[in-house]
Image (cartoon, rainbow, N blue to C red; front, side):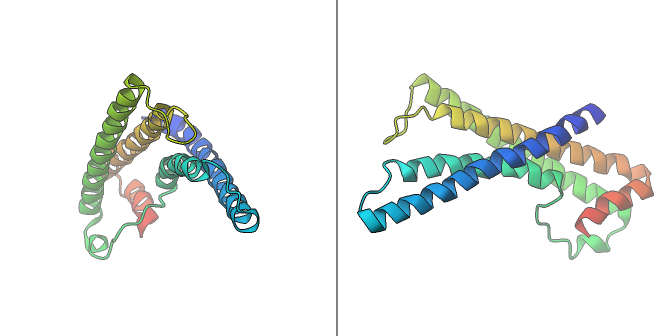
Length: 173
């Protein structure tokens, strides 16, 4: 478990850089495109399509980092009233459900990437292969699923240690 934790802690900062670069590039592209479109009536060909793929990279790349920093929103109005053990159990169940959902999305991304690879699907305007973007989605979702699973295991391990449970539960207090 510590090995997985170390790997994910190393992947997490990479994923934030990996997701910030396309966001910055997409913003710059949209600004330049709007500028050229309004002033010279000469938009950048394929800018909307490129922005879609950059947003896809940003969107899925940021999930792992957000989860590693306990940044996902949770409504804890009622759960905070539970005993610390029951609170850990509920959080572990929640993390396992999230693991399953991320796993299903990961599987769907892999199936879609394989399909796109088999039919050699390319984007409409820029004619770039689309399957690498879905393989990237697969990798990001796999890292997210592993992080959710690691968090679920952490909550289950905290059932016997109140100090560890308090430290984990403080993230969403």
